[in-house]
Image (cartoon, rainbow, N blue to C red; front, side, top):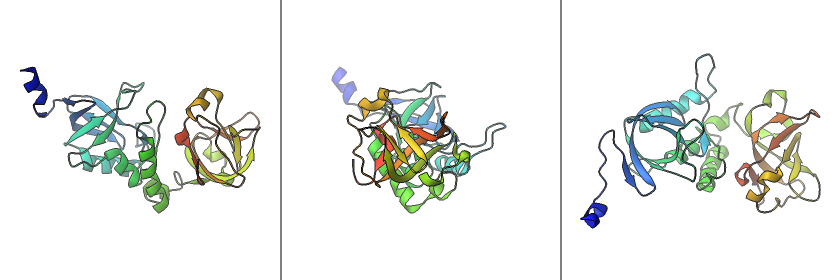
Length: 247
């Protein structure tokens, strides 16, 4: 009898969940924005490994691309059944379920949003299982300058052109290596931007980046200003660093 129950195909009824190993199916009842939705049973899902521009919220104005991302996700998944898959940490500090999402026809929703330029990669340890694939999809949109990559707010930022208006922004920055601080590559400079990998996070990289003078580099993170009035950015994961000539 037990064997018969295990071998039964999964049946998903509206408003219920069906568990399949690490995955389960849910029905989408509401889309909050381009990366968050609610299931029919009230569970709030946050798409894992990416971020879309913010939509208007109370007194906060929406960011460019936020409305389009929400509309695109709504058209794709609202009222439909989707499959959730998880990484090591399944919930964030807001108690939302973190998931990679698939449609019935096999479309990977997270990857689709990135490939179409509705989102940028936004991933943290230990949830890095899909990071390489996510970055691959983002690069397609970046190269073709689709969606957010064709706006002044989110397009690749030249490290030489960073200014005070960029402070506090999460940006993807491109530039040529101009300086390496110390004997290793844990600290370096691109144009006006000083970049560092703190000791607490270096084990994630396994070894210092193999940097070459004038090498084209892409970094991602929040731009800040130091006590010496220098623009700086901290890397927390290998996903935050792209060395264009290999790493």
